[in-house]
Image 1: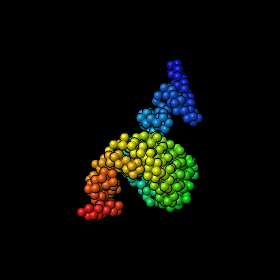
Image 2: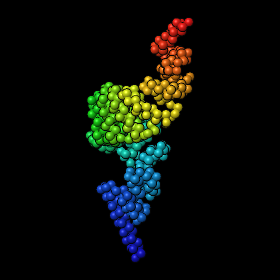
Image 3: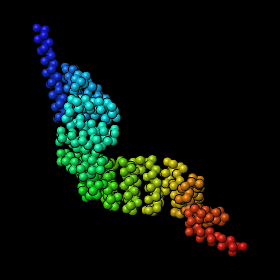
Image 4: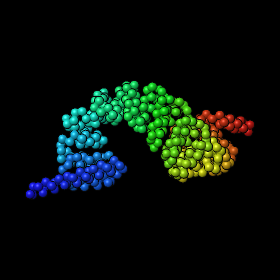
Length: 423
């Protein structure tokens, strides 16, 4: 009698565990709702604590849905504690170990899975991945990826890995063919479209085909910035079309409106390649509005405002903001000196900034770049406003020595001739 009751109790628990397992699977298939699935799997495990399948299912839940690798490992290992020959648990643990850079443990689980299921496509792919990741041995990995595909022709992960291995071993034609096969199975996979575009661009120079697949990848994954950057790179460096390059990045900026580096890249194209200084200024303004501490953007805003668009007030504000962030900024001091001297005719203010710039650049490599123009400006300032002819001559001489400035030569010659007339 007791044995019958115990048997019935065991059967009832199995039924309850099976019911909760089904409810968990349904939650993942219809939602997915991983939290509800977690509840039902844990309830099922209470009724069948020695079920390798339930432990494995919980491992998959934490691995693929809840992004908790530690818990996933615990339950995969729990599955093996219940059944050491659970091949799928060995395969799953192998993949975790690959991600964790644990080569020896990954190989141990992969070889055990191979022993239990010699033709398992997923495990064969893992063996190839181990060779690629830890040994960079693409030639040895290729037969494993091929065998994985023979075992499961629709294994697109193995197809993608095989295509990459072909690229790495100098077989772009084979790689392109494999990506075509992968895309036929998963036409909405942005990564496959992107990799196919890369092959068309870099190996076959079929830029029209590359453009088509870059755009397709972007359409499938508009939130992936690297896709836009690759298309932009092709426009800029292969097609020399900076307008299309900037349009591509503008499209990216709609997805990433707060990305300062992206906005600066767009501004740089408008500024240096297209000469559209108003557009460049607008981009720099967006950057400083988002990141008021960005000195690079403030400096560029000052230059494009004051020198290109003749908006001296905004240029002045930008340069002053740079100095507020970095008082010892050479370029801001130098630009402010120029602005006060040549635009505002305020030699006293200009002199202060020039002297600060002089102290920062003297004896440095930057003196060879900017010294000629600054010494010339100081020469003019001392000659025309401070009436110190001899100091002016010193600066003109320095300007000629460093920058070979023609105007400095003419002014110095004029001062020498004046000295001759006086004597």
